[in-house]
Structure formats: structure tokens, C-alpha cells
Image 1: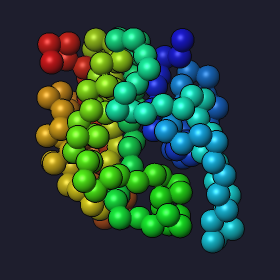
Image 2 (image 1 turned 90 degrees about the horizontal axis):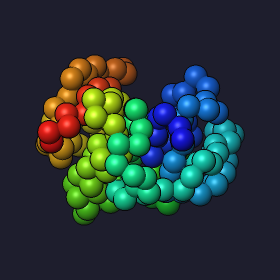
Image 3 (image 1 turned 45 degrees about the horizontal axis):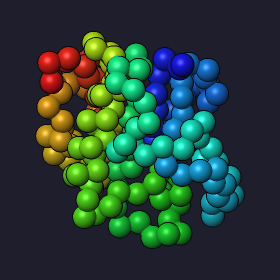
Image 4 (image 1 turned 60 degrees about the vertical axis):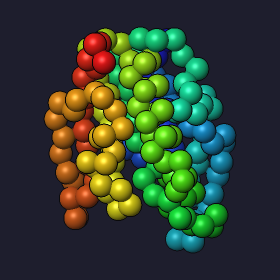
Length: 159
């Protein structure tokens, strides 16, 4: 079994090694290739197809979970952002992300770490953090406008 789970890995864009043997790369999309208007070819090819709202793993399976879900809604079918990163459902995003956090923490070992990445273009981070009872340990804004946040959680086994 792998040590790390990334249930929404998309293109694996922030990995140094996009084939790192320690990571189980997952996505709800199965083996997609897209040619973008700028000539870039992107591939979505998870090790395992999975829905982060209902993960197919036993409790306490992974030492680390990396969670970078889609951040935007209202993207057309032809949108390059949608093709690269996926899309949130405008009507169910709160329930979807709440279920995802619950599942990510369920499969995370006690005292394990969850690394969460969020961009506030559509929804502020403070609204996202309300969707889990787990308390963040540290976080850092990044990007030109500091609207992308990296947040580290350590699973509290009592929650």
C-alpha cells in the first residue's frame, strides 16, 4: 500500500516526480487527454479512479493525504481551467467538500498530515475551513494575489 493519497490529483502539476511511487494518484476522471488552445497537451491519468466524497479505502490507511480539489464553478465544458482542474458543482459544493474532508480524514492515520490547497477566486478559505471540525496547524498564502492557500492539518483522532 502507498504511504500518500492524492484523491484529486488531476495533472499532478505540483509534484517534483509525477510518478512518485509513494503516492496513490486518484481522480474522478479516467484517462483524459486535452489539447489546449495554447498548444499544451494535458493528461489526466490517475492510478485509480475515485470520488473523494466516498473513498474506497479502510480507515487509517495513509500517513499523508494531499487534497487539492477543484476551486471554481461556472466553467463551460470547453474551458481550459475545467479541463485541467475539474469543476465544483455550484449547488452542492459545500456538501461535496464537507464529505471529502470527512473521507480524507477517515482514511488518514491518527496524527497523520493532510496538506490542503485552496484558491479563493470563488470561495474564501474561511468558508472552506468551516466544512471540517479538524483544526489547521499552519497555512500560507501564495501566488500573485496571495489567494492560493496551502494549509497543513494534523489529524486529531478525537474529532
